[in-house]
Image 1 (tube, one colour):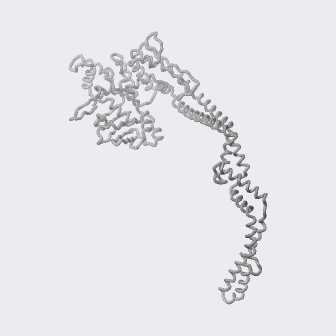
Image 2: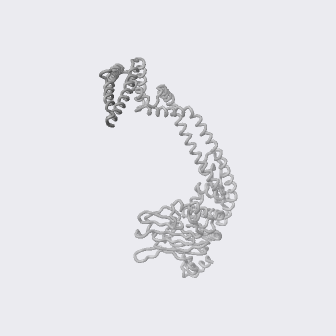
Image 3: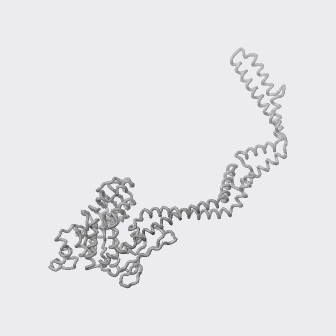
Length: 550
């Protein structure tokens, strides 16, 4: 329940604060006095997007603050889920800076606008002047019926399954498109894959083949130079090995004279051992070198295959070709296994579809069950509001399609006159009839919900006289179980309030500001007399006003 509202630096409002209470509260004022401004500020408090042009003075920030008594409304779970401090007396604050920034706080903890909107939906229902028209809108009609049916949990479960269903359907479409493309390319991909597989590619093989090709292609040169190298090392008299052995012999004879000579002798010995090993390796290499035209042809052929594959696939090496081969293998396997994957997704869709139908059937059944009682209540209320022959009909049909809130098609029909045909409510109901039906709907919803506060902005459009008196009775009765705030131009309704505020404009110097104040009994009588269109000095106007107030 809203216990206090403070608005600073917003539009024509400089600084106002009002205290509110349980029951039926009235707000009146002349057209243009600022009632819509006050509702705009309330909207900001509940998470609406900010219009920075509405800031009164760019020198100061706009601050809207609401105090709420939430002790009786089971909101602890919400506060815990949003990681907020729960306080029975909670404060919501919205700050709008002239720089364009906006901040929101719940119990001094910064929050995002979506969080503010969620909490606002649990605290206040603002029925604006044009919301009465929503009575003819399908979405609102469903919302009313689902609120009465208690379908919130079922609808959440349905929408979760519906999202999954749509994702699976999209996946199926994409799979079919991919499969169709893959089938077109399958034969060519298979050819390319076989071509790469036949090449028997392995990491590093290109370098090995190129090295072997050079050996086989240069047998004569290798034989000549390897032979010369062996000869230079191993000639008995002038070979390098013979010379080193002579050096070793000389050093051996003097190695006992100094460690220097002994070390040199050891080093020469090491060189001899290494050179001897080199000589053996050269000899082995020389023995292996032989002309093999057949192998040369085979190696050259394999190299040409690899070079052609590299050119064909724009690949720079064996590793790149192996990667391309893996990709082709994946494409070929996908095409060959696509049918199984399609069947898997189709099976998932069917399972999901079955769940959706089961949930939809439950939603339909609960809506169907709620309709007769709801119609009876609405007709009872609007009978008292001057529509004695009005009949409401709600047509609910179960469809094959899955909609955002189930499988139902819903239409509300009205027959306003005795013996009249039923037509869609949005087409036949006048403004006054819509206002009365909407009030009936709101009062029924209020009796079913635990909503703390409802604000009506001119719910009385299109009615007057005795009907307005009865609308006031309904609003007053609603105020017995919740906080009801009504902005009205009708004295018959204004007289029903337990508390009465008046919004008015006042010129202060060169500036016009909007103000609000609570009216005491005498002031209320005068206000009601003015609303009646009479002269407050007239005894008949004052008497009429007093009778309305009583």
